[in-house]
Image 1: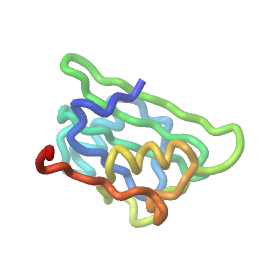
Image 2: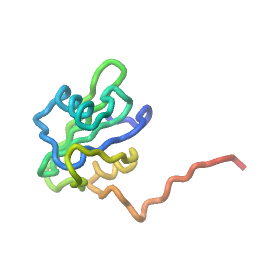
Image 3: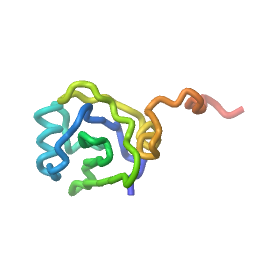
Length: 118
């Protein structure tokens, strides 16, 4: 039940995360490890070492959501940069990732920002 509206940014935690952590452990990791605010209107996405499970932490006005996804077959295309670093992606790139696609889609239509109506 992820919604795009009201989401400022999507952060991916690079490398592997111990997914035995629950809401409190992931919130501490966001605050102390990444120096970000877990209470912001952002999604924080974590993946395990095998790249077949992920968790998404999200604050929603009076409590946290913790979304969990486990693949029965296949793996997520996950950036394998250093642990304790994040990258910022768009919500569209997150949808690609959840659908089993790489973050960069060279054949995707580029985003267009309309300036005026003619």
